[in-house]
Length: 227
Image 1 (cartoon, rainbow, N blue to C red):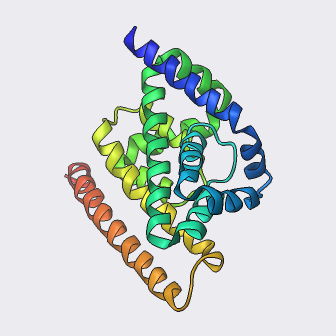
Image 2 (cartoon, rainbow, N blue to C red):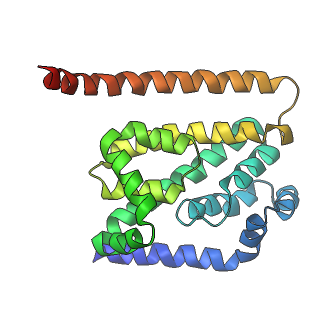
């Protein structure tokens, strides 16, 4: 009962936020950030009261490209703060989506599954087979909707802690990559080369770390089959 009340309150709050900020959402859907950049000058950090909740909603319901808000944060607040605010928004959204999917129960998930069965079953199979490594990869390369990844993880046996760790790592990689792709709009001087090298080193480290873990987990199974 408590879960149902919490979910209902959360959904009402999200719907009210969408309703009162629909004009801004429509601008993002049309890939226009003009009003946002104008409001940053007027509201300063107060604009985060709109952009961060919008990032959270986008991670639950895909309404617009997340790149637009990441780009806006970097253009308005610079590299470090832009990265931090984008990370907060995307991570809170993925946690909220995971919690909602796990809390709403099997009936809701089955209804969602019926609509997106092909994509959903593929992601669920990958997460069930490769666990944390697959969530890191799926979030790092933003070609799959974030909500599908979160819901698939929620219906898998994965616990909250490994989901959170893999989401944090994957979101860092995703924001880094998307900010690189839009760097011509915000980056200054020779910072691009250092920023790119930093991303490549981060990627190699993550791939190496999870690759070794995956190999160690796979090795006993290979030995069992060969013996």
